[in-house]
Amino acid sequence: MKQQARLLAISGVGLVAAAAVLLAVRASAAGIPAANALTYTGYLETPEGAPVTTGVKVSVALWSAATGGDKACEAKAEKLTPVSGRFQVTLPDACTDAVKAQPDLWLETTVDDTALGRTKLGAVPYAIEAAHASNADTAATAEDASGALADRLDAIDSSAAATGARLDDDRATLFRNLDNTVDVEVGDVEWTWVSGTAAADVKAGRYWLYASANVNSGTTGCSTNCQNAASVKVAPCVRVGTAVKQAGAPVYAQPMYYPAYPVTMSVFDQFVISEDTAGVQFGLCAARPGEVPESTYYNPRLRQVFAVVRSQLD
Image 1 (tube, rainbow, N blue to C red):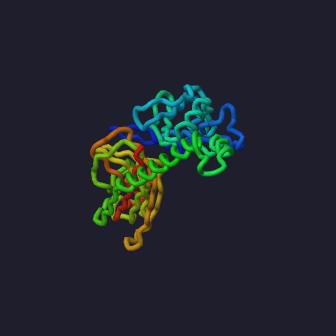
Image 2 (image 1 turned 90 degrees about the vertical axis):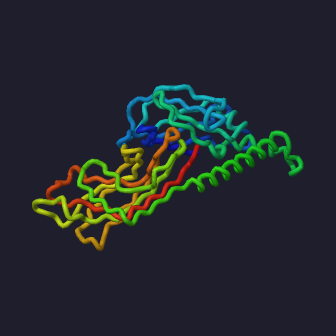
Image 3 (image 1 turned 180 degrees about the vertical axis):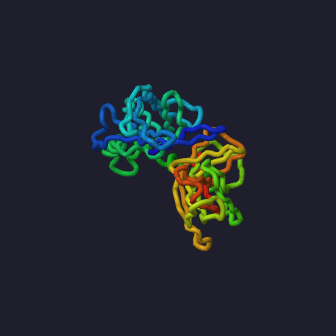
């Protein structure tokens, strides 16, 4: 199971990265480990993309539903110091029992009293298959598959059906925009919204954005010792009203002044919408690099912006 989250709020929209994996030690058919079977391994970074190396307080909980529901188990908050952004939390034995009894769970991480949202646990960690295997030892035929083994198989079937339905929902919530008419000349070191999807009301969840554009050198922005090129950085962005935030590290380019031969820029990142939000746009923004002398380079010009957004509603 993997969880990623971005945590930088603007008008109900959040972005920043953390990644985590729920691991289990492989066990033989004789049974799973008696204690400390599950470990939560994660990675934390700052909004600027640097790994967190200072002390943070982390807790992990498993829930029965995406919102509300019952708390199946919890690793109480503990103070730890990530190493190059990475950390581990050992889950209590109650979590192993909860995963065995109910595979359809949701995992929520809290860092310094800020919950990062819940993520579907998905498939049961493969080490927990030991409980299934020990039951299978006594099931000589398909007709003998009863009791705990039958319950286990029913739970797996139910989880697979739920996952399939969720994938169908994801395909239905797809935003796409291809703007062949946009022609934006970027002359500012601050992030400028270029183009993207139409404003829409979106549900809380994770949204993956792929965006690209053709970039040419413009005709303005250079006054002395002009170079035959422009310099630009682009990034995936989300906009709510007039507020624009970019995600991840930007991609840089330096197109030459030949309008017929643009540089094609492509970027990919994710956004987490922390609550249902109206008027959200996903797309591309650009800026001139601050370290490039403005007087000697032309402004970049962006055209043909293509943006595709895939939702992952938790």
